Length: 152
Image 1 (cartoon, rainbow, N blue to C red):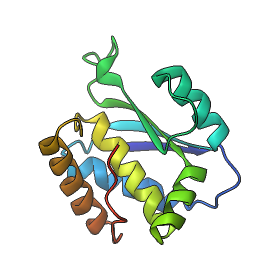
Image 2: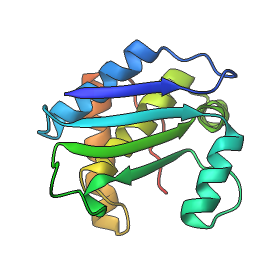
Image 3: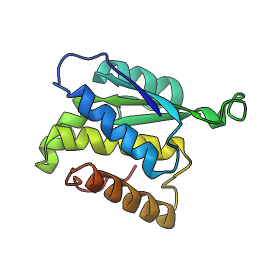
Image 4: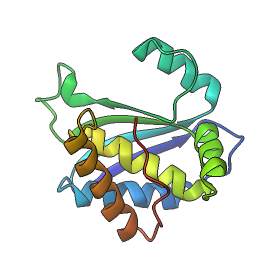
């Protein structure tokens, strides 16, 4: 399994090695131990550009997932899952609101993004319940007290 993690922002301190290990545990937890994905940590400005370009939504969001399976090459390289982009600034803001630590919020967003890459979705109440429970189990296995569950 391989998590390629790049930190392209400077405002929020991030323990990249630890966060990469969280991602690796998430891949193992969804029975994709040989899978690969890339993770990009950005600031709100970069995230706002991506959010507008891909979703038509103005402003930043916390996490975006781009599953390779939705592209033309998804069936050619099934172990290449796709990309997860996280706004570290938005994560820090959300952590303050929840009175949680940024580390746990970043872990939650990474796990959430990886679950989207492997097909989890929260478009229905049942889908949201399944996704939230899987997030909780993975975060607990990583020693993270899950921040208040996110929906969205």
